Image 1 (cartoon, rainbow, N blue to C red):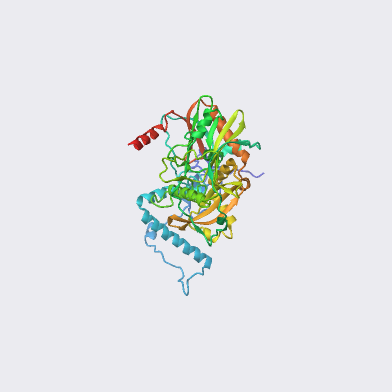
Image 2 (image 1 turned 90 degrees about the horizontal axis):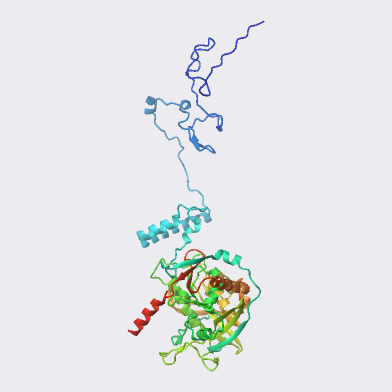
Amino acid sequence: MASFSVPYVAPNIYSWGPPVEDDRSNPNAPQSKFSLLPYAPFGRSDRLGRVADFTGRNTYQRGTGHRRGGDDNKEFQYQVDKIEESSFQLVDTSKPTTGNTRRFVTPAARRRQHTQRLRQVNARRQQQNQGPSHQMHNTQRTRGGGGRGRYGGRGGRHYQNRVDRQASVSVQPEWNQVEDLDLSKLTKSLTASTDVPIADDIIWCGFLDQYNDAYDKVTARAPTPLKKNETKEFYPVTTTDDPVLEKLAIDGNGNVFITDAILAHLMTCTRSVYPWDLVIQKLPGGTLFFDKRDNSQFDYLTVNETAHSPPTNDDPNGINTPERLGLEATTIHQNFTQQILKSKGTRKNMDLPNPFYDEEDNDGMEPASVAFRYRKFDLGDNTQLVCRTELHGLVKKTQYMTAFALNEFPTQGATAWRDKLDSQRGAVLATELKNNSFKLAKWTAASLLSGADQMKIGFVSRTSPKNNFDHVIQATQFYRPKDFATQITLAEGQMWAMIRMFITLMRKHEDGKYVLMRDPNKAILRLFKVPPNTFEEDDEDEEEDAIE
């Protein structure tokens, strides 16, 4: 029988692979067989990507958290002789180009390249005109670093459209926050009721003029200049300064008092974007007064508030800042509501005269054609809401109407109204519903509260984009308030559910003065308990200045 010898197996008690030193004690061990053989250590859990890598590139191994290649396998990398490397020279072996080297570019690609070059030139011009400080601000704003977002930065690629606004009123240290409401969740949490309260008329004040039918024929091709009514006086009086509401409160005719502007604002506040604030006073016995601050921006209309790119304050001295656009829109609205009415022979006087007009101190002014309709709404749960509503004119001597004016805001790339109003008026209105959703919702709610049969909307534009003093009426349109509310998805039951929520919210707090304000940059309402003399010191200072 042939003899069998066990083959030699080199033992290694320290690691995988051949041992570093030969086993001299075993006679079958070949001498220095693996002494010069290079070996790359590895782990059994490592994932082998390739058998050999002669490029030496670093590759990141997923799941392990470290890189492989490069310095890991120096033994297997080719070592170049230093003398040979010093004499090495790089030779260009690429073929020379001959003939026409211009690559064919499609017309569409050429237009895109041209547009991109123009954008770069315009960006450089704007940076030169704005100065270094503004450049740094824009760089930080568009960079958006550090936050979440699919396109980098907090808010993603649309972060550059974000505008940091200031609060409508500064919060004082002595103010105590008692409530915090999320507007985005407020509508979903409310249960819309089909039970819309029936209004009872209490008192009629003021007068109304007849609507001029000639303005139904105004077109964009033949516009009518908007006149300035410098002899008409408007009275945006708040709740506590209304003598009629004060008398009704003393007589116990209601326990919640408010004006239609404030009530419509609260009913549609979920659509607001700009900051605002209101003052709420809770008297002993539970009577509530919803007020606005004197000299606040509450009575000024907004322009493109809900647009994707609303007006900004990039140019403080320009005519298209939010404040100047609001003043322009308010002036247009007041002039329009009086111009479309007949001035003589068609006036209808109400039971009482205008409660805010003083004949002895009028300075040649006369009150505007407005009828104040004081109405009471029974909301249930022992809640009697008294509201002062407004009407602006008569249609066909029997129907009441409200009037409002939309003014065109000149934006880059938008088609002018004069080119679209006559043929595509629905498209123009749809754009305004998107850009001014909150303003149109407030107008519709105010028309429903006043019981108007018709709502007149005028389309007014500047005579020149850079002239904010002269305007023309390009078209007018009648709408039924209930039909228009359905068109803009404004549910009357949801409106009343909103105001019931605010009344319930105030009744669970103690008596005193409160400030309800919208956060300037978040869709959040905050309710603050404030000292009783808040905002009254400013009124005393104004009275002292007037006396002096």
